[in-house]
Image (cartoon, rainbow, N blue to C red):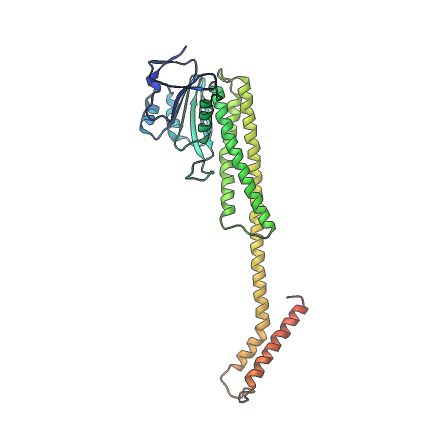
Length: 327
């Protein structure tokens, strides 16, 4: 039986410090001399906190190769095997109130058969859900089920966000069918969210597939099958993201076409108006010269008759354009 000194896991500013009880619950790490590690211990830390950062840098419980990664040096999803454990970097949907969902949150995990150390800077909703399950007594019982539970929750959040993006695309498509152009920047933001999700979820799917293929004593076949199912589910989400990118490209082309059509219609209308008033513009320019001999210049009804003739000319040109089906 492995024994760990309790003080080695007691960090004043730790977010979570507990031991799984093997029945779906947890036991707080109390002020004991030793911890019998027949069940794994879980530490969840904010690596920007002073005591947590010092513990990550100095503890002998972690391999030297993972210290920098746990302290925030790695961003893209990846997995590295270290003996009987893993160093994993995952991305989570941002459910914090001060940011958009596509501004993904990074979570880093070192896990082996007796210790789980997870770190973050911004809050990760999946961790809170797993902790809530443990507090209710229906959470993971060992390291393998903890890892599967976290990955499953992360994928649930990703799938929900992809569905939201899908609904937004449907709304934009319906609006375009009604000849309504979306507000400026809305389609660009949607495409950015799709591309960012595609960029980070593709390697995350590979991480899940790698975890499902590894043979470790603390992951049984059932947990590996569940991990493969999670990878497949995320793969289907990636297919939806690819389809979303293609659909937004079609939307962008349709919006450009509608705007070009509207501009052409306005230009056509202005051209017709210019054609209607072109003869009258010529006549007013001709009669506006300051030279003698202008017909009707001395007649008291000359201006009125001239205006009447201009109106007749405008109506005649408009009738001719309509007969030619230009109006």
